[in-house]
Amino acid sequence: MNTKSIMIVGVGGQGTLLASRLLGSVLVDQGYDVKVSEVHGMSQRGGSVVTYVKYGDEVYSPLVEKGEADIILAFEQLEAARWLPYLKEGGAIVTNTQKMDPMPVVIGTAAYPEGILETIEETGVRLHAVDALSLAVEAGSSKAVNVVLMGVVASHMDFAEEVWKKAIRETVPSKFVEMNLKAFDLGYQSGK
Image 1 (cartoon, rainbow, N blue to C red):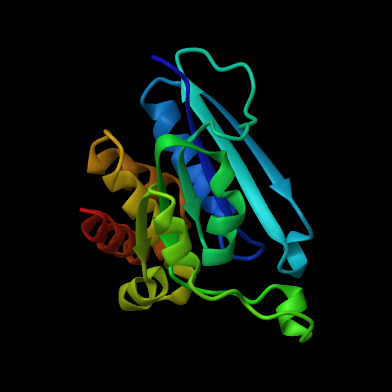
Image 2 (tube, rainbow, N blue to C red):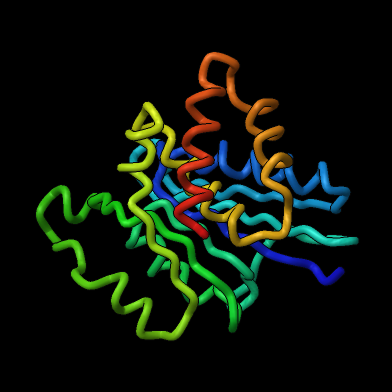
């Protein structure tokens, strides 16, 4: 199998690292060689966080170059736009419709750009935008946005639903498993 690349991008505190652990667990369970690399840019202060995930028969490096990502999973619209050049032709972006103000917007030196999703769509990429925050709240907690988004990504991949649910059971603390399974289901259904 050719190597596949997935990028998970967001802002510190959004749960991108749990999402990458779930994805890595699913891929290893399916017998792939998997490499994961996490880059934190002031993540504890709301800075950009990116995780590179590569999988295939044999993977030598986890890093994803511009134009290589098969899927970009964005936890926030501006991050989807920021990392768009890394998407390969024919790739897909799954993004949360949520907006999180970066520091320049918070302190009033810049405005949050308008029409981000429309601009991305105009490039011709496959865009799947979902209000993951609302679905997470429906599942029981706003903190389940990451698992909702993993459900959407799972609907774009060729692995059985149960493989993903097994990874959730093994990765998430037991008291949060049922809520996260519901979040996954809501995301998975919205991705269909």
